[in-house]
Length: 140
Image 1 (spheres, one colour):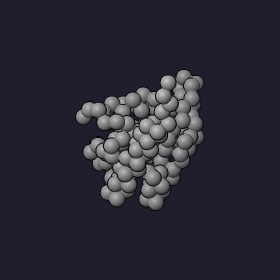
Image 2 (cartoon, helix red, strand yellow):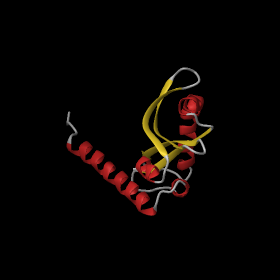
Image 3 (tube, one colour):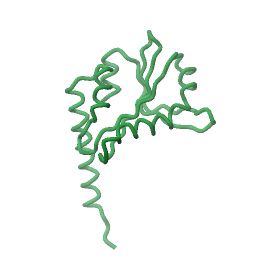
């Protein structure tokens, strides 16, 4: 949903891109989005987790930065970008979108309707996981 909305706003996007980090290890980026004119881009990693603390959005962002920042030179070279920033985007499994994440996504041009759709999708996915867990649990 995020990539599609960014495309509608004029950004180039790619999803599930494998990359090579500076140490030679590999990773897979959820979304790479960039402005072809300014040559500025974003690595976005939406992450659905159970909400546990007020610090969690920052913790997720820092975690994703530690994973993907070592691959920035790879993406700059491959996509001819001058600047790339990494953002870990916490989406709560109960439909919460933290203010930090919502404000950033609005800056990129996502609407409140899109944010609401993302929240609903997260809740539906969480309910499917719970349903599968409850109904497919094998008693020993």
